Image (tube, rainbow, N blue to C red):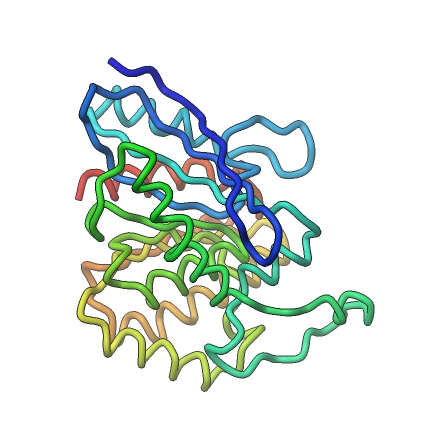
Length: 268
């Protein structure tokens, strides 16, 4: 038996280094495992006494292995810079016309430079080949998932619908409200185009809370997109939605939902 390990990589991204941590659970010699790529790697593995907390992904994988005999490699992509850099990396630019942000200071507006497409290309063209070369992961879409929350939830939806031949499952947790940051007609057209032209349909697990005003707005918008678009054109067996009005917008809320998502992905 090979013991579990948390490996660290630094990969080139936009002229700097992007930190990536990879959790490899205990496994047999020669065994390969499915893989989940996740945003906000800085919050996935270590308990944080501060604002954001932890997803406890290692514990989720261990519990799944004990209860069901299945496990996965978790690849956590860090946000290494200013929070604005995170927002830029996790917000696609060209999927629809973007609405002008309301109530954001002018100095912050100057920092807005959406590049979710570029971040996605980094994952596909730089990160995934390194992971598949250096770690015991199964390849192929059926063994590959993506997951993120907040802006990471938006990027997770983008990745699943843009690369349906690569990702078979996506966790879309508390996604930044599509109708608030993009023109509604434009985002509906993009969703219809991506869904209608996909040869492979990924499974989408939507989750939202509601105990804070921001999270309530997120959930309301998520439900509107789900009901107005996905229920009309997406295969019913390929998506699900969970809304827990009592839960806030943080890792404490996302932790149990990740366990459900991981179990669904591995039990498919």
